[in-house]
Length: 400
Image (cartoon, rainbow, N blue to C red):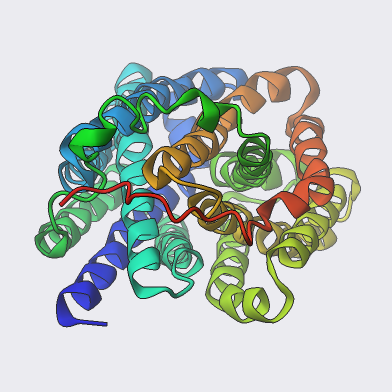
């Protein structure tokens, strides 16, 4: 691996790491934010709807923007929005303004929805160039960021540090990381060659959308990303409202989830090389389903908290493994990776806020039955990620 590629890979680690810190920073303070806003579960679902709106806009625009401008400007603009969103949420908490917090979450969703699709396309290109399994490790950096952000959130909660002070500090850290990382990302990745105009990620050819195996891969991503996203949005409140823990212990359980995700992703390469994608995805789905069953049905708070580790391990590899499989499932890698990443981020960012409306009527524990049903389906869909023999020797998707 040459020096430029090595630096590019390290910068991608940071581009995954930064959203993880930002996301877990406000997630661990969700109970405090809810109290500052004096919001019910349903009202918090409405606040989180800002995240859904921003995410949908970002996700739907990302593929087209990447195919036209390349990954570098799209991930750069997306990350700037994430940094700005943290400042807005901080101010919204300070002045107890639900609309301002909602606007900050909208900006966060817009930045993450657009930028993260671009980062995944760039990561898939690095994986292709180096011919090594890379995406699980990159997604592991996201999970590592959530662990570090969650630990800081727990400390801030225990110390009764005001939410706005905590998030303002995170804003400054995120800005510094972005300034350092963007310099090593090359221009041109993901831009379609002239002879492939009109077939990019924003307008993939009909055969990409009609590729049954690719859509099955997308279904796996949907299930596993929903499992991850629902924990990121609701796990602290689920443990506080559903199992009677206080806010600090609720954040601690979320940290355990994030740590399990990190271990699963950094250790995933060994198991993927030894047992193959199908076995790993199937085992992941079984683990995730087991964890969800115990969290939903157990009335023992200690057992439910421990079961979150199975939930985290189960959710850890589905997203990155499916993205790798999508990139190898045929020609037009940008369109394929972008399509599956879009499905994943819809589930990750848009799906969980809807659980708030279900939770307002039936409780968060019952709402998680929806997540359980999707994760259980991935057990049967797992063979779709075996894409050996499907890689085409056709022309490269990327120009430049």
